Length: 218
Ligand code: SF4
Image (cartoon, rainbow, N blue to C red; front, side, top):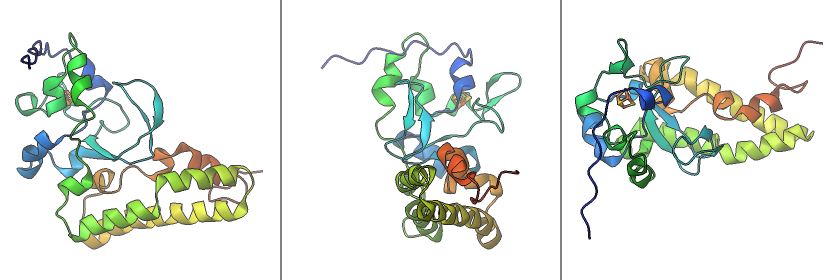
């Protein structure tokens, strides 16, 4: 088999950093294990979440969970893209960043969907946190919630109430975990992913119909 072509060196222009942080892969586990990448640096994108795929192109539901470096608050750029504009962890940056070259984007396309990490790969098996994350994932399953939102939008009040209960559970767990387990609030984007109304825009629309969680003023 021919040797893979060398990746042209990174020019450190920051173009990819401004588009968002990389997904993490098994090659990034050592950086997670030794604390260079910590839960507060990460964002979990959940199965079924509506996302923009920068590599394949297009917007749609994510087929499988992934964990990535989170964006700066209120922005899109990678959390480690600091002022003056530069990567704060360039020498130990994740494998996607080391693989991507603006001059040869195909190098990342070959890698980006393989060996991605999920929360289950990162959290200690059987730990309270792993079980809580799995419980939250099952009870707020986004594929089921998407169906409920569609039914609620069509006027199904039972579906609206079921969606409302899921939204309440999500909010309750986000309040409970920092209080009971002493987790920093900024780690919740890793442990639970984004709040449901952010990861599933259809939920807000379903719940804003009069009688929902968010009532419109007359
Ligand atoms: S880790 Fe560094 S190189 Fe990778 S996207 Fe973030 S700032 Fe850019």
